[in-house]
Amino acid sequence: MEKDKKDKNVANQDSIFLDGLREISKKVLNSKLNEEEKAQFEKAQFAEEQVKKSQYAFGGRIY
Amino acid sequence: MNQRIKLTGKQYSFFKFIEEFCYQGKNQLSVNVAVHRLCSLMRKMRTEAVVIEDLPITSNVIEHECLAIKKFYNTDIEIKAFKFTFITEKIIQMSDIETLKDENFLSSVILINYRADGGWNSYLYSAIVAKPKIRFKEYDLNLLNNYLHIYRKFQCEVSLSADSVHHYNIIGSYFCQQNTVTSVCAHAALCMAINNMESGRAITPEEINNIIGVDHQAKKCGGSNANTFFTKAEVAKVLSHYELSMVESDFFEEPNRDYTEFVYRYVESKCPVLLVFTTTNSVSHIVPILGHTVNSDMWKPEAAPLYSHQMGRLNYNSSVAWVDHFIMHDDNFGMYLNLPLDSLKKITLPKHDPTFRAAFATAIVPKDVTTPSREAEWASVIVVKTVLQELIDRSIILDDWLYRIYVSDKITPYRPLVVRTFLTTVKDYAKSLDGEDFQGYKFSETEKKELTNDLPELFWLSEITLPDLYTANRTKIVDFFYDASCPRLENQDQIFTRWIQIRFPYALYKKKPPSPQPLSVKSHYPLMMLESQKDAFQW
Image: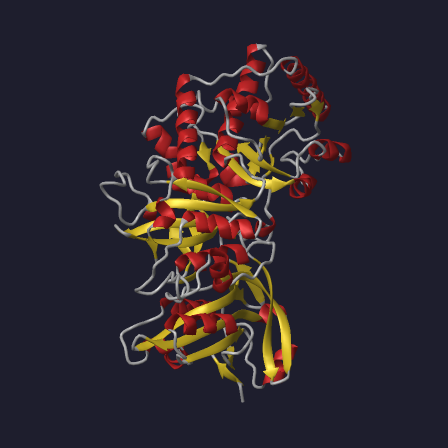
């Protein structure tokens, strides 16, 4: 009986969650990046671009 | 006779062995540490015998190398080379070798000695060395929490007589040293990285010289009169020749960037990473990183964010937080060495404190991988938390596991999520779907197809979990799939369009078409085991 109850709860959870996902999938997810996160992204991306121009690592003498 | 056997068990001195065959130490205060490391490893792996062969310089395996050295010195210098085959069994005669199994062979090594500049120089031209293991009674045990990801099966041979050879396989990795005149550490690092990849190439320093135009006369890369240096463009040229590509990170330009996260995500993807670190102001050294160790009892991952008051969605813990060493080959010091992660980290600015710190890293990746691993991992946290927030905003009650993910950055004490990101293939991901979750639920065959049928051949997978599940169960709650071949982000919001699908407990949520589908797996599920981890001995 306990197991039946648990399975029923699981089934309910299953459909509640799916319904929720269906609802939010009707539109494109909104960007929820805050200013700090945006700055983190920009900084990291800038560094990734700069490294392509960098000649440091293999330009020196490597032993 | 060209081949002879030495028994190398108890009472045999490897110091004497090195004195006999590694001429560098003869009559001078010089030692080849990598040769000592090789012998130490062989001792630890319980070698009982070594077969020694004299290798003529006309032997096809070293001929080009010997010619290059002679060309560099422009004279017919003296060269003496040996091949060693280390074995776990006591053998009396050469024919005994035919009775051995593959696991009895520990290494196949070529050592070259050349006499120049007033003395002998010695180096390991190539050493195929089995994955380190512990012999316990009749079993071979892997090292605890030791994950070598870049290694493969090598076909080797040992001569039994002038006209017969015995073929065998070693599962392990390739190691080599620069000779300092026709090759430098960049040659060694490139050979060690490329030759250990699954593609099974066997490139040599001379092949690299041919690609970059070093001829040892007009253009010299080594020795005191070197007139050309190994530039980044040349590394790219070599990789391109082998249809490989590279992703780089510069830790002098971006000193706040943690070199360990960059290195780890690619090594976890089975992509070797060439790590450059400074030694003195003007000299750098380069080594290949091939794996890592893990310590699931680490204090810092959970304590540091709390004590330093770091909060926010992007202050999650990459699973590298539990990695305590990278496994590397250093051509100066030997194979399978453990590099403590903190040893090359500094908090000072590089321009004021430039010595002995990580400077640059180059990951060797398949040609079509363009999306940075960092972007994929950050997107996984942001997108998943955004989806959960949208559900909460609509008063949808999350199951316990997703709720714990949702509140991870809201509870006290703050408990950062754990994210493990790596490149994987549809084939490998499909193999990981045969397990069962913590409650014993499994994916149906239809669900397995649905989970894989819209995936590109290669993609970034981020496994999102909680610290307790990661360290105790090695399980995950969410799988996040992200495109690995994207152009540069034009704006950060594009991360919301580049993800492919998310596997939650209970449901698969695909971006296209937007139709969530139910899944049978409802609880935390085993982390994806890389092929190299399947026989891992872990705590």
